[in-house]
Image (cartoon, rainbow, N blue to C red; front, top):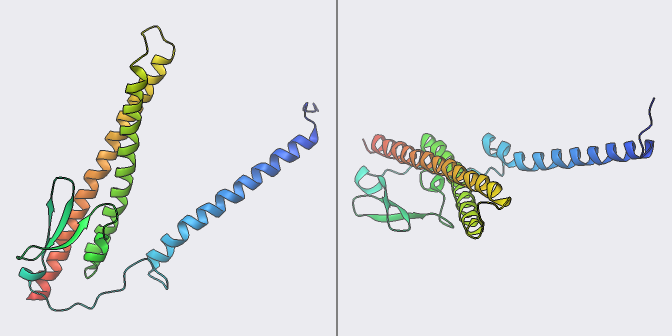
Length: 190
């Protein structure tokens, strides 16, 4: 049986490192999935908002709609146009606005996940694309780094496109959440 140049001690050390990495990976997975499991079960300490007492509310006063501005998206309530929320960084979650409807809440949570992923991917892809354009500015056709930069640039464009796809899905889920909320308001008003 051939002995490795590092000897048997190296094999033990490698296995120990692998097992530590496995333990750390499992611990991180447990920490990251524990809130999701509690959230899904609606148990004590759940991330779900407490069920709202459904108060009678007319469709004209409580129905929601989304209005887009130059750099913002707002949720408007009722005929009077009262701003219920300004969506975006630091704004309230859609789930907290439509929490009176279970179906709307499901779509609101999907909206938030897709919005978060889409925003991160779009920003990352855009930054990568811009950085590679800047890096390519000084490169000549004979430069060996040029092909690698072009490949990274294409990766940035693809990442941006995937992010945009998630953002479109987020908008679709927001529309569904608002629709379900308005449906439940209309049913409650009758």
